[in-house]
Image (cartoon, rainbow, N blue to C red; front, top):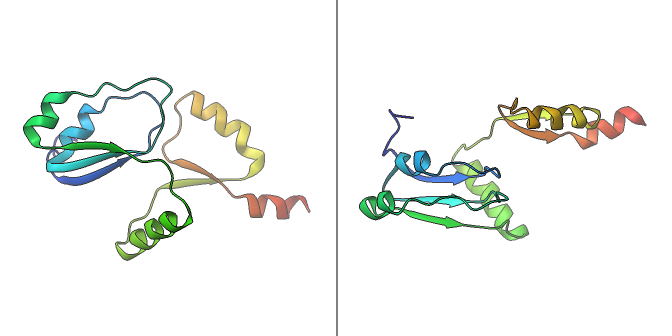
Length: 121
């Protein structure tokens, strides 16, 4: 994190738990943007000084409709942006929830519903 300070034009924060924004703001270049799309249960602290001195912006966005989702997928494809995920079957969901509670998750879980349903048919 220290080596990456001031190197990013933008960050999309998908974390839906209460967390500090200061480390993320520190990663932004001058005029960088932090966009929150996760929805924590409690308000987050937003430090003003690093925003003012770095001319940085914090915003938010709810999930868009089909048009916005397709635009995002196209953008990711054009720029070779991928995500790190852990694909799980439906019968692993309870274990996944236990792992979430223990903070034993490195990547976002994606439930493979199609193959889960095929194995029960």
